[in-house]
Length: 81
Image (tube, rainbow, N blue to C red; front, side, top):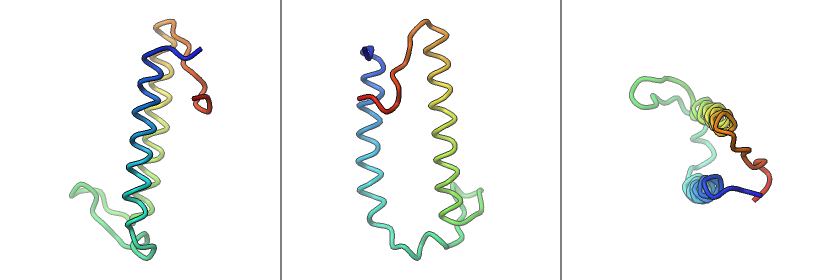
């Protein structure tokens, strides 16, 4: 059974996913190869920046799971909604 806090986190996750999908569809495919300066200081391609965001998201999701488990809360499996 998913606890209320975890349900809230999953609901926010779904909202963010919808927003990412909406804005992502607006980016022309050729832009992904362009060099950018993310946040005015991190140089790379659009692809490398997106991969960084994904890696960072995975890292923080794992932190959240560890935190919940340290509180005695078993987080839901990410594929269960």
